[in-house]
Length: 138
Image (cartoon, rainbow, N blue to C red; front, top):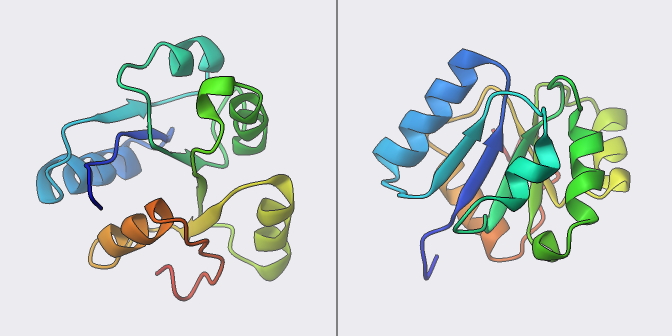
């Protein structure tokens, strides 16, 4: 990464949110990390972020809008055009991965997150690589 990414992570599970926060802010020392614990008022909250995210990480099962709905909302926002949107999910069967790809996600990262490989996966997605091999993403 040439510049530090600005990350939006939407995750309703407190433990997963805490792990990601420690990883992104602590281990990776990233200053701009936004954590949403739900998807209420998602569009207004996402458009209000400053600085604007350079990557979005979406849990698929978040109330009230799931990851597929949030993906559609973001893709409709001009300020989110071209920003990688990554599905973070424990649902990693081949059919589910294909459904995520077809829906328009840029990559998938399997949960639970592997704290040793996650930083390099994030770098790869930010440089334009698409990651669909769930075993590789662990």
